[in-house]
Length: 98
Picture 1 (cartoon, rainbow, N blue to C red):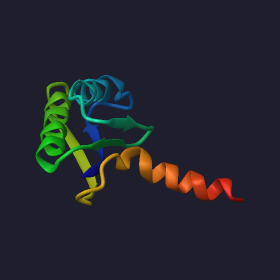
Picture 2 (cartoon, helix red, strand yellow; picture 1 turned 120 degrees about the vertical axis):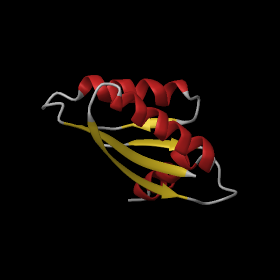
Picture 3 (tube, rainbow, N blue to C red; picture 1 turned 180 degrees about the vertical axis):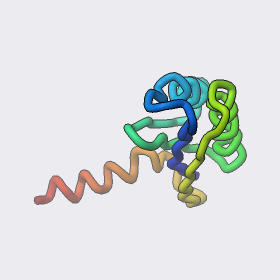
């Protein structure tokens, strides 16, 4: 499964860097393939692994903030590993044909 998710601290003011960094530390320590962008983090693994990491990352944010919002989008496609990079490579291959 490939999941894109965002954990947003609420009530932490405009600077949410510290709680977001706490979440990213948890995600990177998980050992699962992941990539973070400005608005979302993508993580790949099996259902239980991915959702356990999302919960741990949420707990890390909640240790600093009193409230948060979590948005999750999941692509569940058994038998297709390495979707984190393969999907982007496919699009880049088509773009290179221009």
